[in-house]
Length: 443
Image (cartoon, rainbow, N blue to C red):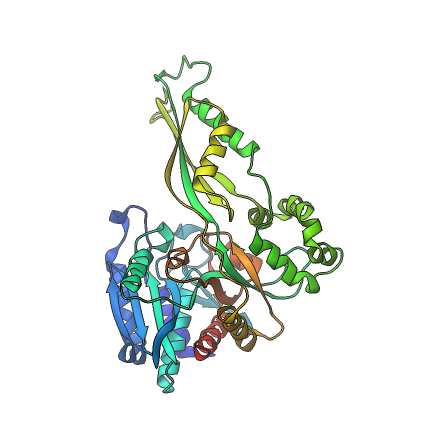
């Protein structure tokens, strides 16, 4: 085990860089501490690379190569989501290590999302600089500070690069991982490389009434009207369909699937409709691969338990499947609710990202690094990323934007993202450094 690298990683994990939608709740000092720690922990990198703070907290590094054209961009973010410390088996910002050998595991918020990738990138560059290696073409490291709240850091970096005429040939951000059993009927290890991501939007639902005392409620108070609207949305999900990245994933994995899945995946032009209808039955992840999803996440009503709400509100988080749009999803929600007294407003939203190619040199570079660093038996496959990331902003300046974190993750480890007990195995994280090192050598 590379003890020094692990200790550097743990130091970064101990800095509580929690981002909040309300900036006044964000501890700016923690973000400053994180930035100040980097030159001390990675001195060779900071000596060899040009670096700057973009906006308030985002970081942009440039590693000059022999040529400036067609650079590589490695992305990560160093903000993390809030924690409820009492729910954790180990303190969320202590970076506790449990187990030994192959079982050694680091427990911390951000261990996977996304300081794991950020620290692995820094380690890869630090060692390459120390070895005297330099890239053929420019390499940029782009580290956002507010990805978890869909903030301004990554867009600001893109604006800087666009102004300077930088058009990357390859952009790699967080996303899929090396998994087993994530696709029905496929037991081999697969590197799920996101070639696109779903759009994200939030609808606000509002019901209003005169209010009054709870002892004399009307036949349909605002809270009940809102609840009915939510129920109607839940009962009328978006239709299912197989979009090109998902079709490509099944075609890629067909030779490795057991029957009858192999036959279904191999003849997807004929079986696609049946497969799209079946996938929601296998769980929430496969359901999200084939439809736009909507879920109510926030509710508010009266200020007192014996008071009728004059205004009842709900937030509905919608993730848009490739080909869907904010406008279409809003129309679909209004039709499902079918109540003119429910106000439906788009609070914010962005359409799905463009689809990057799963053929060509940029794709081959990622797949080659997967094989050399993580295992030649791993099958690299295109994948539709279900969540949103900072990478969507980079599609404005690059046609080859991919989403992949080079870590072997179990289902339980994936479920801990944004939940309690987030963790990563030490050996898994160290192999991630090898991936980034190999990818850089291919640049």
